Image (cartoon, rainbow, N blue to C red; front, side, top):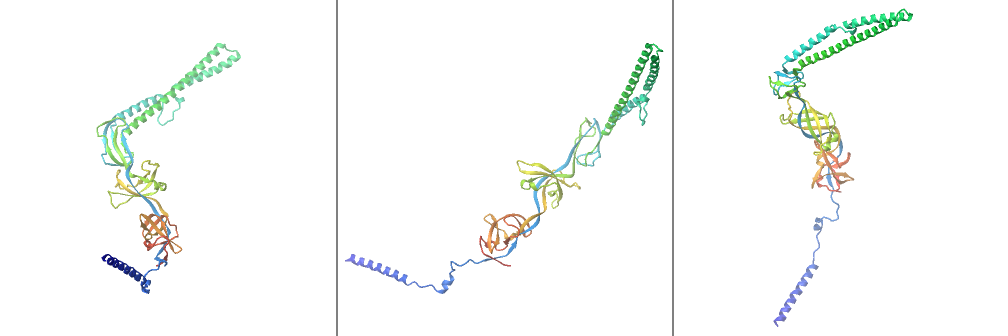
Length: 409
């Protein structure tokens, strides 16, 4: 009896649950009009985004590249002795500023002067033997030995001519004519020998004149002059020391102008030209700039760095700059290169991508761009936007591909 009551109780509970669910499902109340208005319609058109716009324009920009380099001396010379001797004077020291042609050292001249005197005496002896006079052009025919030989030759010629006529008439023996012929030939040979001897003496005179010129040059070479305008980098000899030919005296460097050697990245190599301006600065003079121009360009790129080496000539009239200084330089490759510019606020960066939105037919079109130089509120677009296209210059962060836009103020 207890099992039957329990079973009936469970059945009754199940029946009431089923009826309650049916009643609740059937009595669902309809939504009010306010609730329906609060829910957005799934099929409604998205609202347009109001943006300001700007046109891409072309403007001339200065193109430049930032490089670093080292200052170098324009020239470096080691001054050496051209003649052997004792260094009797040394007029410079380390760091001395010298001008081109300035006497920086003198080598003892006594030996050189004695050689000049000896060469002069030898030359005078030879010219006196020939009868040469200073400043008068010498004719070999006027030499005494030549005159004597010429006189004998003329006499022999007259005798031969006379005997030739006599032999033709049969007035003299053949042997007399032959003797006259032999005498003439001998006289002619003596004349030629005398003339050759004089010419040989003249050649000796020229040789002795050259020896005298070399002796005088040796005196000139004892005075050592600076071949450049610059400064003494190193003193290599001391006063009183004996120098052989080629003995080093001092090392000089030319410091105006200076050379700036720098490496230009490969991407800018094609734009480098001789004569382009380079502005540079050094740590020794903060806030001050110096100017140079490209004068030499390397024939090829460095295989390791893929850079083009150039040299700029830098004016250093005040001698403020020094060889070895490290310099930061700006190479101007073009002063008025065309560039497509848009407002910088039109550019947005999302997930590492730089883009702008171009407005076409009232909709935003996404463009991935490559940026260049900034000029005030404008920025250069290297790739992605063309001149004349319209871009969204506000609310770009609210736009996506295909967003409907309206142009505002």
